[in-house]
Amino acid sequence: YRFEFPERTGGLTNFLNSMNPDWNISLFHYRNHGADYGRILIGIEVPPTEMQAWQNFLDFTPYRYWDERLNPAYQLFLS
Image (spheres, rainbow, N blue to C red):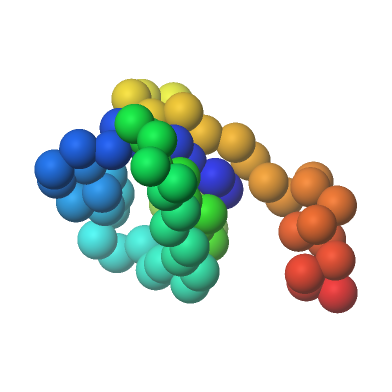
């Protein structure tokens, strides 16, 4: 998934703290080019029994996000 959040003190910390601590972050890439928002590409390992909780997180997060699973670059990365 790709997320965008306000670039301000504590922005990244607030984002990470809003996630369930039992979910494993398997990939994390943070990018900012001096903009007023930060971008992260994040791979999350969510147990099958917690997929509804993950969907709830996505539905109620105040951060913009994109599901990158169908992105051709993602497909090349995994092949």
